[in-house]
Amino acid sequence: MAERRSIHEIWISAELEGDAGVDDIVTIAHARRVPIAYVAKAKVEREARSEAPQGVVAFAADLPEADLGAMLRRGRDGAPPFLVAVDGVTDPGNLGAIIRSCDGAGVSGLLIPQHRAAHVTPTVAKASAGAIEYLPITLVPGLPATLARMKEHGIWVVGLDDAADRSVFELGDLARDPICLVLGAEGPGLSRLVRERCDVIVSIPMLGGVSSLNVSAAAALSVYQVTAARSAGVD
Image 1 (cartoon, rainbow, N blue to C red):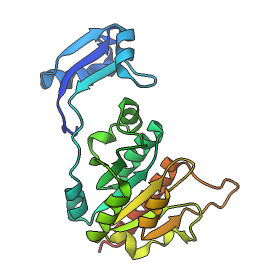
Image 2: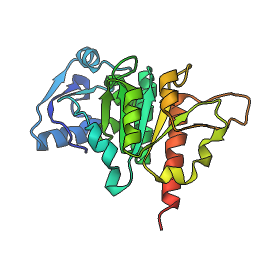
Image 3: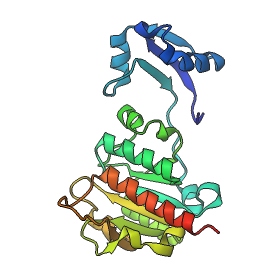
């Protein structure tokens, strides 16, 4: 468990009392002295605020926001920073899936604009499969200005756009340097100001009849491409 924030209380649907499926939750809660209440299923579903709740809801402290300065200085385990920024992604399911892929690929931090973008909600948390508890995430007031700040720290800013001539598979040594991948919004893609702040624009080759990938699928492919390039560069 990440243990980045405390759990105040856990509600479990009354019909699940004694169910083997929640035994681990109950055991861990008792070990950590977290109160458990068995309540009506409808009450759990109202509080869950996500689609298809599974009968358990935990009341936790707010998720701590990561320090942007620390993100720009170092990556995971001493590696160069490996960041991802989302430019206007508004679908909570997409954001959750992006967070899950970023955590799995070893991304060291995710940047989300404060305005006109999805933020971490119960739906995002569920779609991330718990990855929000591990991936450092910070909100930035203006993404274009933050990208300009990255350049001052020697971080390459690489935007993804369907119309780019250069492929994400051609990043080469750039992927081993401090890097930030920028993903555009569903539909419109990168905004003009964000695109202007990018050092390089790359695309994902589409060899079939469909012209583009969903933003969360594009994120998964792109972050693992950087991870593969970095792994290949390890002696």
